[in-house]
Image (cartoon, rainbow over all chains, first blue to last red):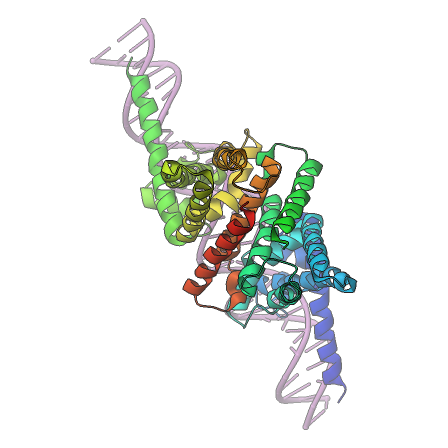
Length: 204
Length: 204
DNA sequence: TGCATTTACTAAACAGTGTTTATTATATTC
DNA sequence: GAATATAATAAACACTGTTTAGTAAATGCA
């Protein structure tokens, strides 16, 4: 009976169709305007059909959130070629900030919005987040071993680095950087300068 | 004609009644569950009445957002007695983090949610934000003058400090600190340790 | 005081949201 | 070919923010 496999394949294809449509609408119009009805309209099915493939709206955006992590990880991995761990740390930070500034909606979904985290509560651990955090831990661990940065607890240092870059990007994404009263490109310059200063302070 | 003044007073009292009810519901049940209808129910008026006193829901939460800034500023001002600017900077940071951890809903409204910033767009500058940021600028300026911290551009340094503490608090408030897989109080300890490390790196 | 006008309020509706239920049409199995 | 299982949907439910049209009370003026 190959029918079962075909059905399974069709089910997966339908899930992909929904996710593709939802992703496209999300990046074009934002989270709020991406309603179940608008997705249904886009893929030319009834709204109720979507609930045959996803438990609720949160589950859809959890999948988009996971896809976004894959994209970020691809960017981060490009820095694997940098041998010096401190230089790699700097490059990772810049890649992270750049990703946030260039993909504010994805960043929001990954690190700010509540929606995808609801899914994680009723499921398991935050796999995507842990994986990305793992990158940072590995690099920082190498920096500490080679005595490139000031000595300190690995986790405390990692939280310090992540919190800082997240602070930069999230204040920008949620429009609090307006206090600088500067044009957008000048604000971005300040963000990168601030990261450079941070790195200099961390350096041994 | 004192009637005009009485009417003005009554209008202000009604606004206060709405804000008080909305604030109480917001702190008890969160933003989403604080609907116009639930506020109307609470103050025993019809939903439409609220629109005679506030343009929309965003305006209500903009006022709550401003009240929250007043509370934060009261906390921050307690550190004015600390003469040494670097010590004061440390105390301000701890006060900020503490405020965020103890008042996650207020913090969310002030520095994460989009709702109150919509109001600012159609109005003027982000007065509350600028005022709080001014505190930081003043203290950092004194630190630089007295050569207590590493030299650098004032604004770049300020963004560095603010982004970092905001990063700590916002990752906690939006439940991304779960990657540490620690009980809540241990996570909070890490946050404070991370801030201490940050300060040590900033120190000259 | 009596009437016209302004003010304060609300019931009902509008246009939307996420989600569920009962029903129908199609595909599969025996 | 008949019985069963699957896929899809129309319609409804319970909400949301907001607007409109209509009513009742307070005020201004003669």
